Length: 430
Ligand SMILES: C[S@@+](CC[C@H](N)C(=O)[O-])C[C@H]1O[C@@H](n2cnc3c(N)ncnc32)[C@H](O)[C@@H]1O
Ligand code: SF4
Ligand code: SF4
Picture (tube, rainbow, N blue to C red):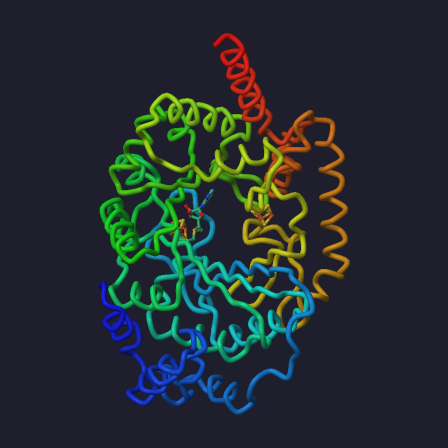
């Protein structure tokens, strides 16, 4: 899949011939892929839901360009259906009503476009398994984005996938529209195949590694997502690094395994254990500079230690009001991580705009909780660097009765300080 023309043919094969022609003409006229897709008539889409024709009849939104520079991040559960049954996961669902309908997608996109301060809309396609949307529904969602965004509003898409069973057409479609993908891979095969099994209870490591290889070949691979269970944390970090590199992974993000946000039950790696894991990983990588694995958390924590921007929500401080999790039924919460926590539900897309959610009593209550957690953590000497870490960590600590005066990351910053002092001493003696 190297030729641009082949990619377009594969990606757009689901459109009617007139739709492909309209797309090609718009591209030849210099339009970007998303705008070119917006040139396709609703009748030429592969989807017959009447909402597409309704959107076409309504015409472009009567909105002015954004009046701010904010980024609105929507972590959208376009489907909760999944082909895996990972042992720690609370996110998948079965049965009807677990896929976002085109009508709810329209509502979500109209609400996003209404958000006048948002110069950029970032959609993180989450789930469930977003690749199960298939080519037709993915094209439909992208078409709606093209038709409904505010004039001048940028739209970005990325997704998280288990990498299992990706079709060439789906990868071509993501490639054409610049949708980069992170793939979940729990380290070495024996660990991955214990935690990440298919619906049929078969292992998924080979399929995920194959997905990584194909996404890399398409230039879409954004890195692996590794859930750090107690078992992963106990591994020799070099063994873990080598296993990831053998699977073709050159960049990874590590997520401590988290329990239910409703009641704190289920597997949980304590923040301090996660910090110790990161320190051991850092030392292993420093001792073996030939290993080329980039680790999102180590890079971001080091940038935070140095007081520079991290580009990572978990270390930026307040995130309330900028990141929303959207469920298939249109229910909105603060960040998808809080699925199951009633306190983090901010209403539905039908009831409220994002601006109204930001101004809601529910949001005020969350901000009060956030401030209380920040006050508790501010005594830690590293607070200026971690900014309290992710509020979800504070939520889990509250539920499990483990909230203390540190978010749990102190050991990582203390380690950076030790390394810096060692380097200064060595330089002084050189
Ligand atoms: C819920 S999945 C959805 C996307 C896709 N199905 C996948 O597995 O990548 C998003 C990420 O959350 C991770 N995850 C799921 N349950 C978790 C938990 N209890 N603690 C930490 N991460 C978890 C998954 O491993 C995956 O990397
Ligand atoms: S593949 Fe993703 S959504 Fe599916 S069960 Fe695993 S972590 Fe959950
Ligand atoms: S709750 Fe955590 S993961 Fe979610 S947006 Fe905030 S910092 Fe990021």
